[in-house]
Image (cartoon, rainbow, N blue to C red; front, side, top):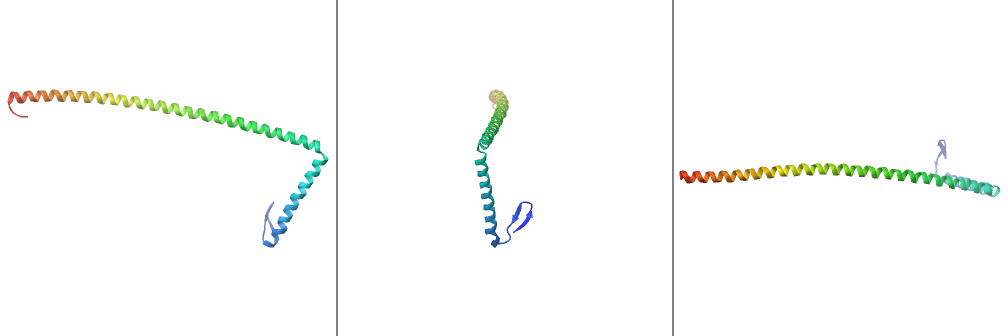
Length: 133
């Protein structure tokens, strides 16, 4: 086993692995024993510390939820605004299409009337001249 960087151990052979894992587990066992001993000696202090930790966690959770709710509200405002913008754009587009359709109907109506008039005039000319046009 060799140290590569501060706090980083690289296992260089399989032979050192059991020693390495034993040292790690011994370290954690020793820390746990020390923690349990301290808890037994200062149980009232640990209870206070635990209560303070719980309160801090509760406050952090409350702040997190509050921020999350505010983000949700702002996101919903953005979505609502986008929908309104899209709705306005679509309404304008629909109105433009309606105007175009109305204009095209006018053109078709005028063209149809003009064709009827020309057909009538051509028939009259045909009858007058007795020549098919």
